[in-house]
Amino acid sequence: MVDHSPSLLNIGIVGGGNLAREVLEKTTSSYSQAEVKARYVAVADPDPSSPAILFAKSTGLKVLDDYHGLYDPSLDIHLIFVLCRDEAVTNDVLKNSPDHIRIMTRAVFMMFWAATRLEEAKWRDRSLEMETILNGIQDFILVITPDRKIVEVNEAFLTKMGYSREQVVGHSCHEVFQKGNQPCNEGIIFCPMNEAIKNQEPSQQVVTRIDSDGQPIYTEVTMFPIFEQNGRISKFIEVSRDITDRKREEERITQRLEKMVEERTRALEETHAKLIHQDKMASLGKLSASVVHEINNPIAGILNLILLMKRINQEGRLSTDDLQKFARYLDLMETETRRISRIVSNLLTFSRQSKIELKFVDLNRLIQKTLFLNSNLLKINHVTVVTDFDPRLPEIMGSEDHLQQIVMNLVSNAAEALETTHGGTLTIRTGTPDDAGHVFIAFEDDGPGIPKENLPRLFEPFFTTKKKGKGVGLGLSVAYGIIENHGGSIEVQSEPGKGTTFLVKLPVIRGPNQAS
Image (cartoon, rainbow, N blue to C red; front, side, top):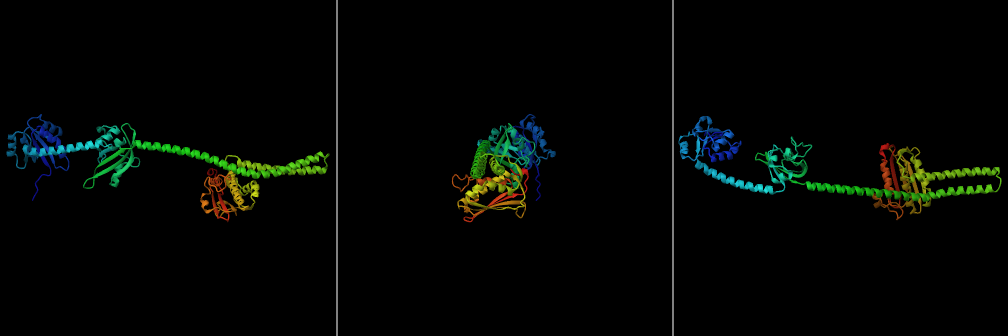
């Protein structure tokens, strides 16, 4: 069977009254959709000022003053709605219209139109309910088309963002949200719509948008894609909420925390600096106690020589032999004075807060000088020092004062450890490992050793196993920091009852900008 039905249904209307105008107003846009294969072609009424005729003229439809003109083959009318109240016109159309044109009288049309009005009323009520619900929701709700046009928006969005409906509906989302003429650049501004399109699922993100006054508003956005049966996205439902107050409160809290941390850090740094100074002064006190014995001996010798020379001088005229004795005594006094000067100079170098100066340092000479300063401490604790220095040890670039403090701390620790065993041996070795990029200093003692559980904490600030008053636990921590700043490393090996070894490695050459 051949189907002679037209692919597009052309409709004509007889009558120009309010009913005809209402029908045209409410259905013209629907009939223009691609899915609806129907369209209005012409309206016939003898009154040129009737409502339907005026509407038809405004929309470009054909206007006739005689309904018989609807039969003209050139109009290709397939269906006529007879909407006028004149029964004579209705009967004439039914009797004389061409056979291929179908007729729907006013009475029949009104049955369908009444049902349509009823459904329209239901939809209107439902739309009003939905609009009331949407406007009662404090979250922002927008409906956006795939080409980024906003087609619906609730009152909460308009109120909070400071827009009127006319400023939003019909405009692109990037025009409203970012005040931009181009869609959001994916690399600069995160776009929830792009994310939803890419993943084909809802997208959620916190984004910053601009209100009508140009002020940034933080929003938590969820973009829901709505799919058609063919899998294409027909629209997007965006649900978002204003989190500006929360975000700003978080920023205020973060700022307060950062300030508190900064103040606490500054306080800790000040405390740390004071304790380091305290520890250094404690070390200086120990050193001073040792040095005072070293100074007392030459001073006592010088004093004895001075008294002897005074007594000889008081006995009368000096002989040649007396003058020779005086010369020898003066040489001894000069030697002892220079010894005192060296001790005092080394002590001042260790104690003063001097500016860090980087230079080439001979570690062998530095260790010998430090042992000299600690000679009395070692003697008091019955420590025998054995040195095994590599005579070809290369010089390193570093701070002599700080490197001396490392040696001072490690020698002092070894002496105090050996004190508990009533003496022992401290062996200090220097050398160059196989890689030749570093030198090493090894401090080996045969003291009581360190318990295994204490080894991981040895270099922690304020950790100490010494008795109260013996130290604050910063010596090894300070040494560790100095070694690290020189680009080196320090390792410890110990076993209770078998002694302890500290191995310090330092790079042979370091640039001035690498140490601090």
